[in-house]
Length: 134
Image 1: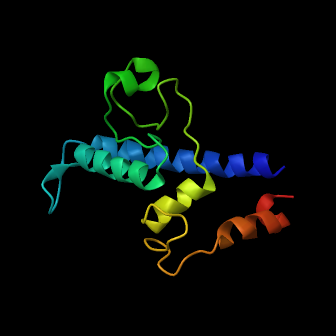
Image 2 (image 1 turned 45 degrees about the vertical axis):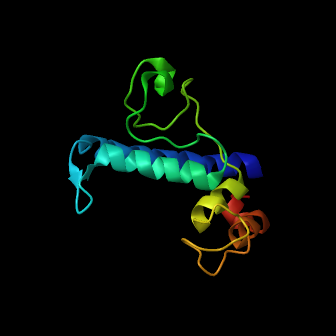
């Protein structure tokens, strides 16, 4: 049951991400003040950083990708983040914490959790029947 409910939460996250990416895609050629780079360039930079911090290969991509990385190698647009076979990327909890901490180390706090999360989020989810939907 944990796996099923957690996947349900991921599905909601993916849907929200697709809405945001669609809005950003519509503004892709616009410059981001004060940086003077386009939204497309900005999303690529953020994705590269998340991949670097996660230390897990390519699991995040910007809004424009090379054709070989696009959905089924048929498009360069990348609104719905997925691998070339149109499958969602997965991340481990350690990969997520590396990114959320912004340090590239799941044991070194920073970023969104400057005082650390001490794995509290995962423990609360696993130990709370209401959060798990049981």
